[in-house]
Length: 505
Ligand code: GLU
Image (tube, rainbow, N blue to C red; front, side, top):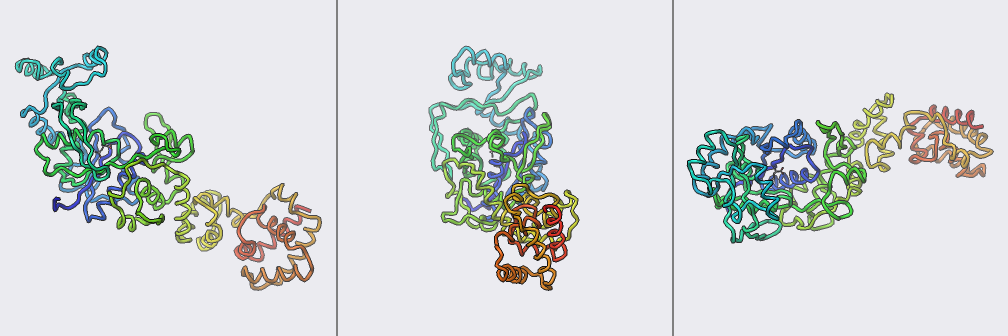
């Protein structure tokens, strides 16, 4: 074990919106680094210019910021290893490409895409490796003078790693234990392309992890197949002693559990797979995001944290701080985690209940304004206190609480049929008289007085209360009736009852 300070990195490629699985990877890195008193780097892996998508980097940064996942170093932060965007580190990588070539650990290949295609057609399961490389056009088969001439004349080439077959390569994974694979099944991956003078993902990733003194590589399971190659690269470059520990996180699975979670599942079942709304710059297509769908960042963090890890007890509601204390890579599961988005809603519900009413009210204020409602925060806060247990999302507040801000203009037909009785107008007229005499309009007091009046007259409690609610709310929903009237106040309550009598009789 090394004594080094823990250093992790989140190393996304800016190829589009950050998938929710990528967010979980960032989160686990963050939790681990914080817990270990370590540092976290944001590195942008943009060496594949063909897949580069404008706006993706900014999107990634904004997403993680929204969720409270903070970096110590990297793009947007600077640091001792800057620059942190791989496209700006060209010169750094060249040195290592030359080193591998000089030591016979890699070679130059001139095969054109057409030539490679022809091989794929001619040889079933063609792979550029020890079994085929001596039939290809590369620096192992061509005379050195020809290689030099080709390069001098500007012929494009790639550099490939030279993998020797027949060796067991062992990847030591903190989650999966020892994973061993035969080098015979690996191909001579391209490490560098002369066309854009950039390394490919594999080389840039290893060189940067080494130079940036990364101690732990925590990433998605989809990178596990690349890990043996990475182990070899560390050895080829003479860095085996300081190789980071690997931890490959379990896949996020479809809600049904069969196969990898994809954007299509989100479209199909109606939940976001991206943290923020994303507009594809090419197609203009808009994909929904957790933020815009009304999720609280704390809820998303809590939900994601438990997809592939659990604290080993039944505790489900965990703050970032608690997660940081409890998190451990060893407790991450090896098998995929079903993406149970209903559970995501449940978390949001829970976090809304925990949140300060005034805070929720201030999130609700802009929506009220959009409905043309002017109200003060204090009143909205009291409304929130009454209805928040009924909602999963802030945007559902309006549906539950609009009558606190606007008298009903119409009355729900079904409810009228069922609840507005022959004597309702008469009884509600009497009720107005009763309410008028009340000076303390607090819920409990009003309730006591109204119920005493009903009882002493031998009236039907249910009938009166139903008509009362219909008059004040416009339908048969809402919190406790006398909590509503306390908030609306005497005048407004009476005005609504009067209006209902006039309209419904
Ligand atoms: N650039 C890779 C990605 O987009 C990084 C994989 C890794 O963490 O090594 O996920």
